[in-house]
Length: 61
Image 1 (cartoon, rainbow, N blue to C red):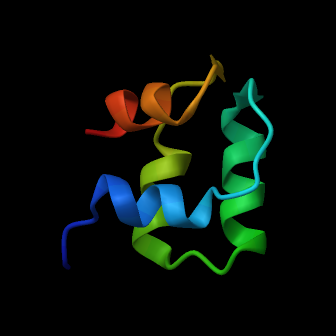
Image 2 (cartoon, rainbow, N blue to C red; image 1 turned 30 degrees about the vertical axis):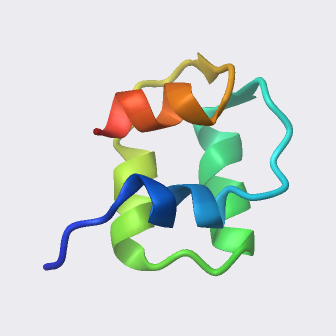
């Protein structure tokens, strides 16, 4: 299994409107064609609202 990067995650979250909750992040990534590793990382996030890309990156990495 390869390791994902913050840039890779943000690529799949492009166009998302913040604040956004975990389910919204996962749905946006799926719609943008994210691979299983990125989806798994997003699904593992805490169930809360994220106020921007940096908050998502901090929670994952």
